[in-house]
Image (cartoon, rainbow, N blue to C red; front, side, top):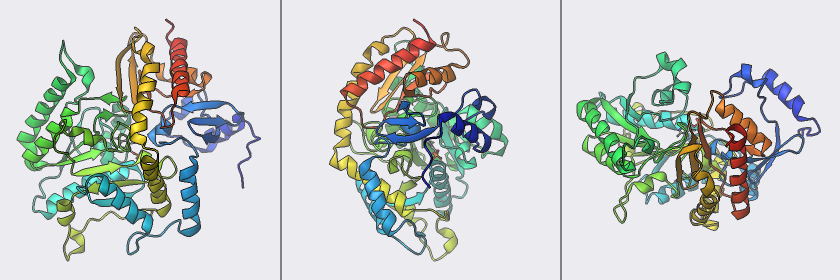
Length: 453
Ligand SMILES: *Cc1c(COP(=O)(O)O)cnc(C)c1O
C-alpha cells in the first residue's frame, strides 16, 4: 500500500516517537527535537510531508553517493527484482556477486582478489578482525590475537567493531563487554605544534605505533585504520604519508593492515580507494591486507558491505578441514539486489568519469566556501576530495551546539548534523556551480544564526 503522504509531519513524528526507537538519539530529547518525517528524495534533496525541502549535506550518513532515487541505479534494481531478489551464497552463486567481486578486485590490480560479503559496515569489520586472527592461527601463530587501532577511530558498534572504536560517546557504556584493543596516537593534523607540518605529526604518530609494535607484535594480529579521514571523530584528516609508514611498519613487524574504507571508499577522498593515496608520488602502488567497504558502495539503496583480501591470506584457509575454513555465516550475504545496486554504482563511476568530474566539483565548492575559510569564528579548516570540515571555536560553541546548528540548518533548507563542534559537508556527487554557491550561502547563514558575528 502506498504511504499516505496527505498526512502531515506532526502525525508521522508523533507515531514515530511512539513505536520507533531511533538510533544515535536520546529518546527523551526526541520530543523537543523530533525527527524530520521525509516523504521523498530526489537528487541531493529530501522533502518532508508538507513539501518543505532539505539539502542532504551528509549524503544520509555518507551512503548516498549519487543523490536520492537515482534513476540509473533504480532501473538496475527494478530489473534485478524481476529476476532474482535473493539466493543464498553458500552452495549457490549468482552473476551480480561474481561481477562485483571481479570488478572491485580489478580496481586493486587484483592484489585484493578475494571478496567476502556482508550487509553492514560493522559486520565487515568483524569479518576482517576474525579473518586476520584465524589466518594467523592457521599459520601456527594463534598467539597473535590482539588488535591495534587509532585514537578517535571509529569502526562500527557491534561488540567486536566497538572494541577497536575509540569514540567515547559510543563506547563508554559498553566498555566492560569489549575485547581489549590497544590504541595509538592518531595522526590528526590538528595536532601540529609551532610550525610543524601535518607530515611531522604523522611521523610522530608512526613512532608511537612503532614503539607499540616493537614491544608487542608477537601478540598483534592486525592494525585497523580509517585511511586519510577519521569520519565519526569529526572528519579528522591526516597526511597520506602516515599510510605509507603504516604499511612499512606492518610489513616489518608481521601484522596485518586493515583499511576500513567504509566511509572513505568509493571516491569520497578523490581516489576510488582512499588507500591509493598511500603511494609516494610516482612510487609503487601500496595496498593494505584487508579493505572493508560499505556505505556508498550500494549508493544508498540497500545495505551491503564486503571485505577484500589478498591471495596469501585466502590461501591460509585452504584445507580439508572445515574448521580451518573461514566461518562467518550471514543470511543475506551477497544479496543479489544489493550487489546489483553496487554494480550500477560502479557503472556510474565509468560512464560519468566521476573521479575526474568530482575534482572540478570539489574546486567549485571550495571556491564558494572561501570566505568561510577565513572566518574568525572557525578553526582547523580542512578538505579532502568530497569532504569539507571546520571546527567552530570552543568559546563560541555552547554545550548544545550541534543540536542548535542542526535546527538552524533546517530553517535554511539544510539537513546538517555537526559532530560536536565540527561542522562538515559530505555531499552527494551531484553538485554544480549553482548548488555550490547556494550551499556555501546557507551554511554561512546557519553559522550566523548560532554564532552571531
Ligand atoms: C559507518 C562506519 C562503520 C560502520 O558501518 P555500519 O554500516 O554503520 O555498521 C564502520 N567504519 C567506518 C569508518 C564507518 O564510517
